[in-house]
Amino acid sequence: MKLNADAQAAYSVQDYSGTPMIEGVELVNLRRFNDDGGAMTELARFSTGEDGGAIDGLEGFVARQMNYSVVEPGAIKAFHLHKRQTDVWYVPPSDKMLLVLADCREGSPTEGQVRRMVLGDGNSRLVRIPPGVAHGCRNLRAAETSAIIYYVDVQFSVGADCDEGRLPWDHFGETVWDVERG
Image 1 (cartoon, rainbow, N blue to C red):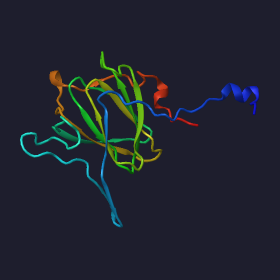
Image 2 (image 1 turned 180 degrees about the horizontal axis):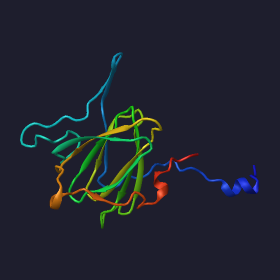
Image 3 (image 1 turned 30 degrees about the horizontal axis):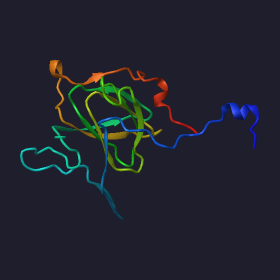
Image 4 (image 1 turned 135 degrees about the vertical axis):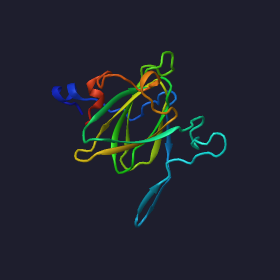
């Protein structure tokens, strides 16, 4: 079958092969327990002993602080960048966030790569974000806030020890935040 000229000019084939992961970023599927009264998700099991904040399943990560953040409907919170800190994010399954990651590490095998993924939206998983990977999120819910619960391995501080760097929200292009249609 031959398409007319207008349709042929706009025609493309969607790539379903998946986007490669950024070096050092990890996804951990979590256990969710449902019953007729609700649900419980096990976010982390902490190791015992000397590495008391280590999270099983995330090799070498030791939590030093746990935070809770909410994002207003449609809001974009970006971009954060740490030189020392690793983040581990969790978005509850009832919420829906677009997470954008960009590898800013000089010499990394995935340097310059940008990766988008939806968190929450019925899924329970953790995302490990290493130092040097810029990250931000957009609440995809139109009328309600969405939440992020996250662990960090460097405690938050202000002043000279602050590791909370920023890049402009559109540093990787405005369209990185667009909802893909098609």
